[in-house]
Length: 309
Image (tube, rainbow, N blue to C red; front, side, top):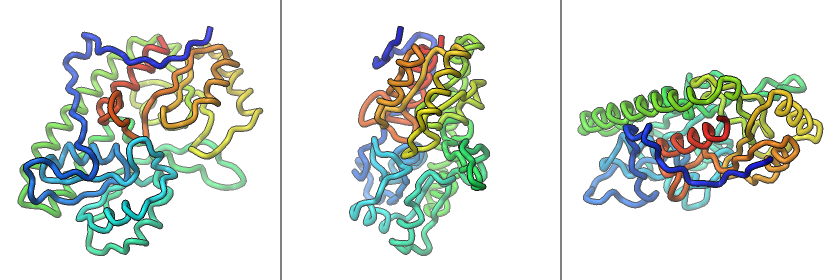
């Protein structure tokens, strides 16, 4: 029988040692007690959270794509362009995530301001769907692997230090502490995934965003409804995916809270499996359960592990 999962999961005793970072301050609000915080812009809320964890009270961080917005297709507003024009350091993911990025940067015409592509050199997977002689698109969702996210953290530290060398020790200390939290997160995820039967460690998702996560933790992505947002599946593709789910006895299918769950619910109904419609990947939530990167990963792993066991 199909089960639609929409629950908040209590923290089990097994994860009591995991350090959960506090939610970042509201975008655009100065850090209390700071009179000269460095104005920093990140393309989305996940990256902004990384920067806040390194920059602390020395950085005033603002994401361009707000909480709940799709960073693939977000369109900058006049206000967000003004924020971008005032930044002294700018971070974006790259790898094709921000489809609007180059146009926005051309519009503000910034010179002499560091613009850091955090995923550079780390995008090693592609999104399926090569056709008509076109190369497959890169998969930009590197940050869903916490170990690769540590490289983001070090690049953020380096950029902040270059612009603000007087606070180099401060940024280094915070980056080291946060990297330790990511190591703890990685160890906890491994322990949670180990409790899922090996035959069930298969993912079928709405948006093909979990390849780096799956590779790190020994899961296999067995299907998806869309390779990237805005691309509708054919009826044949949906039927093939239903057959695969049934043949491989995959226990559940997953979608992110930022997308319309209708197609995934249809898929789950036709396949007769559990449906989880509130994972997070490209954006933090406005409040719990995914108001920071570490909380996002904790919540997703709990929901995935519960559904696949």
